[in-house]
Length: 329
Image (cartoon, rainbow, N blue to C red):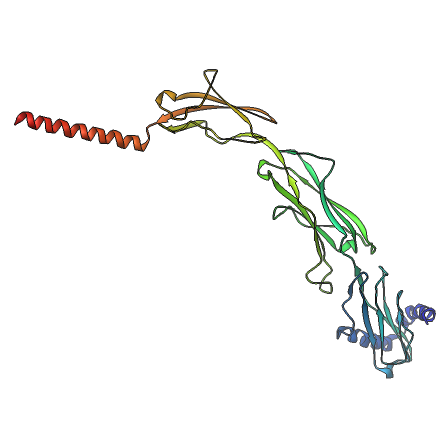
């Protein structure tokens, strides 16, 4: 029966184009039955069962058949013929239902997609190991293993929860599983320190496919970024009297900080006073080199100190006034 159906299908290709209105009418009811959901969804996972029903009024045909590479049923003279497989094992499957009619033969196809989510999605740096250097360009690569169809695959790179650009895809009509590698260039900064990169592979099979679409995520790739030294204080530094003289320096690894005044190494005072005003050099040495910052330090009287001085002045004035009154008396 399978061999016979192949012969019939070859003649259909000619007859569909020559049978005119009658064949178009027969094709219309085949499509009508499909639109009425007689056919199962046209998207199936590899290895899953699949079923489709070809149906039409018996008076309009002398036989219904399925032309398909796996599980083709015998020709029937009834009103419907079911194609069924328990385990889809053919990737490029093109089921065709045909009807033998009085003035020719008609055929309509089932647009079937066989898919398989990836076995594994992984992320790594291309040709690099160890820490990243701030400002340098690196390439992330996302490897998607054994996925089909690759033309329906989209890959997105992430840093934390932030997508790094639009999804990437491939213009590839291959139906069998393949392994694809997607890449993205990055330029890390100190803000990325101890963050992580990852990628996500999604099979977007349209409304006929599974909802939500199958998604497989990679592992997290921790970003260790060497950066700095970075000075986080202004060059004109105002410090309240009595407070600690400090200038924050960031970097990874943490920089070694040295204070200089008049070319001599000094320890920044914990309780500053006016004699600590002047020019300082802050020297920071990290894994990426050394940076210097010149500071102009001004020690100012704090609001609390001003209040205490004012209170002392008031007390002195009061004492003097009282003393004068006593002298007059």
